[in-house]
Amino acid sequence: MIFTLTFIVLFAVSCFAAAQVRAEDLDLRRLIDEALRDSPDLHASGYRTSAAEYRIPQAKTLPDPMITFGYQNEGFTKFTYGNPNNANTQGTVSVAQSFPFPGKLALRGDAAEKESDSMGADYEALRLKIIARVKEVYSDLYNTYKSIDLINERADLFTQVEKAALARYSTGKGSQQEVLLAQTEKYVLLEKEEMLKQKVEALEAVMNAVVGRPADAPLGRPSRLPHEDLVYSLDELIRSAYAQSPELKSLDKKIDAAEVKVALAKKDYYPDITITGSYFPRGNDFYDMWSLTATVNIPIFYRTKQRQAVNEAEAFLGKARSEKEAARLVIASAIRDNYATLRASDKLMSLYKDGLVPKSYQDIELSLSGYKTGSVDALTVITRLKAVIEYEISYWSQFAEHEKAIARIEALTGLHQPGD
Image 1: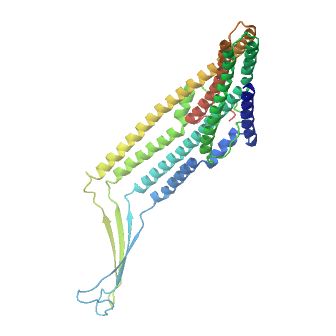
Image 2 (image 1 turned 90 degrees about the vertical axis):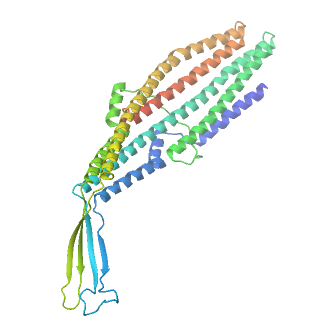
């Protein structure tokens, strides 16, 4: 049974290690560059931004001129086209051009520019979110691989307990239950390792989606995850977010566009004008004729049309301002949340690294010695051994949470750590 268990453990470890040798190590910087280059979501946002830019010259341009072709006939009894005895028997042509009331075109162009700027800020916000998402998934992958390593490395400690239990059992000082308990815990480690490998596959699928690769594209193991310390205070982070968050900049531009649309709606109280020039060729000795007319729309339904359009534009302006205020509150709350996570992770990492883990190892050594001499039971040794493994796994989990919190703060504030 012992031989079979050992073979299973070694086979699983060797297969997993071989799979990682075949894959290239993951480099965070290269992954970020690839995501920014290939992300379909970022491409879609870029196209939306370009489309908004193309609307600007359209909004500033006059309406298309209209050409009218016609024919004038004298009487209803017959066609008189070409009859030399009639004056108006030729075709007519008219050209008309509409001119919006002064200031309308400029306001339409200004509104289109503000909306384009808002799209550009949305693109930058999405770019920062993608960078943060890559860093988050990378941190989770790094943590998961570290946990697998710890399980493989600490399996030897359970082997020592198992050997000690067998030795005690063979001399009659221990029970078979102690041997089975030690062997069961090794199987529990195998179960945990398989669950972590499944998590690796799930995280790889997420990373491929973020980066823009096929779901089954092979990924390697994260090469390294350097520890970063946040150099900004909470107040500095919130002030920076208010000043340069792309999301807030986008909302600012939406407010500007809404203000312009209010002014434009008020301009619609004033009429537009259409100038029409017509030419009438005439036959025989009659002079050809021409005409120049001006057509002006009369906004007599202003109570149900123009006034309501102004009300609508003002309502959208109020909506845009409220959305910005809500976004400010959400961003400040998210920064505080991640800042608290970061500080808690720092304290927990220090607790695990400087206190719990080294003290637990000392306790394990004493427990193993005591178990071999019979002064400590097997359950106590195994419980303390499981605890130190959990402490080490928790340390790397907090390490990953620390880096993920920094990544999210960078996306929220638009700040970068020195050296990024």
